[in-house]
Each structure stands twice: as C-alpha cells, then as structure tokens.
Length: 113
Length: 113
Image (cartoon, rainbow over all chains, first blue to last red; front, side):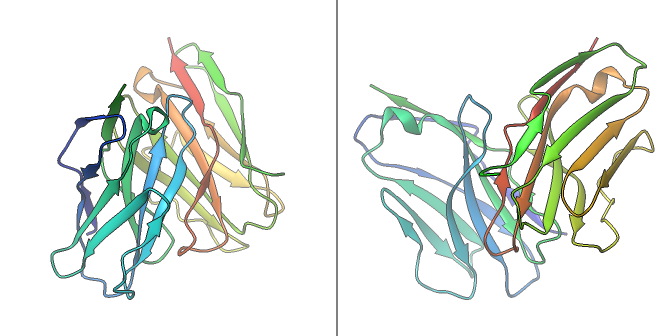
C-alpha cells in the first residue's frame, strides 16, 4: 500500500525567511511522481511543484524547491524568501499509476509579517 | 473552460435528503477524480474516470455514493440519504496524465444538518 506522511501539522516562518516542510512516503514502485499542493483559505488546491522519481535532479520552481531522496523515500519542500501569500495548507502527494493520488494530512504554514 | 468548475460552491441539506454535486473539467482532460476532504483531514479518494473505461469506484465509502460522467466531460457525484458524517468539502480534479498532476476545482462544501 502507498502511504504519504507529513509529520508537521503546523509550522510558522518569518516573512523573507526560509522554511522546509517534510514529507515521507512508502511504496514498492520504482517509477512514480511526487507533488506538493498548496491550499489557501479559498479552498483551491494549487500545484506548487512536481518531481519524477526517475530524475535525480531536484525540481525547482522560483522560490520553491524540493529535496528528493529516493532511497530514503523523502520529499521535502523548501520555500525561500517566504511571503505572506504563502500562508496555506501544503499537501504532499504521490502517484504511480495516475489512477489515484495519495495525499498526506497536510502542514499548515503561517508566514508571520 | 479555463479551469475545473464545481457547483454548487456550498450546499446545506437535511439529513436523509439526496444531493447532487457537479464537476465540469478542463476541456480535453480525459481523467477526472473526486476526492473528499473532511475538516482538518487530508484528501480521501472517492472515484476516478479515465476516458471511456469503467470507473475506479474503489474509494466510494458506501452504496449511498455514486458518480457518473456523461460524454467524457461533466461528472455528477450523487449522495443518497445523506448523513451528518457526509459533511465535508468535495473536490473534483481533472488531468491529462499522471505525471502532470491534477487541476482542482474550488470544491463544494456540503453540510448535512
């Protein structure tokens, strides 16, 4: 069975600082995809960043980057130069077949002005 | 359309009544998913449609839940004889493939009183 674990229910960071959100997963698949989604109070889930498991290079999207450790089954999200608009729930997600995505329980991030 | 559209945005219903939730995916997206998000929880997979294939209904919690997708486009999630534990946000997403990730709608908040 595939599982995704986010061990930090809540986090906070000062504006302009850097924060890292943790995610681990469990799978026996060799090829899969990993994602981070952001859910602000508006409820809209927004794709932040994606990583293909067969790629060793860590994905980067502007201020967002990941640290993908395939052997350790770890997929953390780093947010640099945090902004007030980054305040949201962040969900880590996994899929191998596309039939179903498995989501973690989320990390609530608050950016403090 | 430009995004995934869900209606209604909010629905309050009396226990025992039936409800229908609608999802209009992005044009050209062959895959459509329904998830349920209970307060403070992660996302619970409900059902997956891919093209003209038989849907994956493995996540539906009971036989009171059903979904259909007409013409490979609009989908309707129906909950019969609603119960208070059905209260949640119901999210719809569509995709062109597993590696791309989902595009989510803004969800329908269902409250059963």
